[in-house]
Length: 313
Image (cartoon, one colour):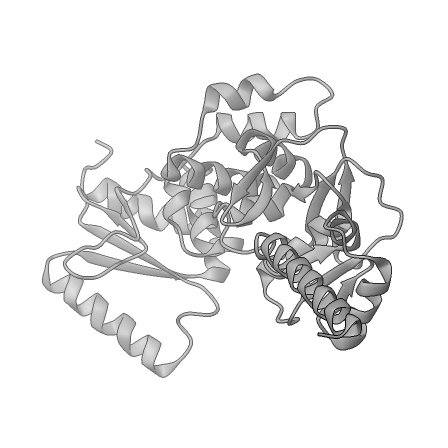
């Protein structure tokens, strides 16, 4: 074999070895890798440039590459941002809370915490500089720990969302009230709001499926003296009404904007009501406008029914 062929063969082996190593690292990061990681793996700047030209490395953010293909998902996007933010960075605040399943929908901005100072901002992303971070793997994404995530959520989002998160944490059996209270302190962001949420903890919020259902519990029930329901989206005679009071044999449905508007949905609602009434259960229905803007009137209607059954007597 000629010397040139031997050299070419050695070069091919080296490239294949590098790609195997790159693949292993990127595989743990949803197909993403940084320039610094490539250099640590022994990939030269010239090889990085050549692989970029060949399409093996695809730039997605400054100094961050997709390896082999640039298919984008929420997982890959979060990893891109974490890698861009530098070693030790992780998803935090409301983004981590959503990732942990504490919220039904993501918060408006994507939150990333990092030990570094980020000077070049990215639209729609908030970077938080912190000296130390404890990272936890949450379905393949590095996130802040449970306590830090709860504090961060309280520091940046409204009380209603914090209460919803605490209820879901309770449902998931990860809520440690003592630890959360101990973490709160003067000057620590989120402490006052987190304590308020803990003091008004309502586990039933974990079972709601819409914002209007949350409002029903926190305004109509909590603020206007209506007893909390025995069932929230519980199965009653094969149906799943929003709220159910067992002693009063009473069901309340609250109609949001998105799930009661079509003819098929209204027909489903009527059929469900008829079935519950055949079992002797009274059904009251309120729309989102009533719950939001006339909670006292909704409460009065409900209390009349409940008092009539002797539930409060």
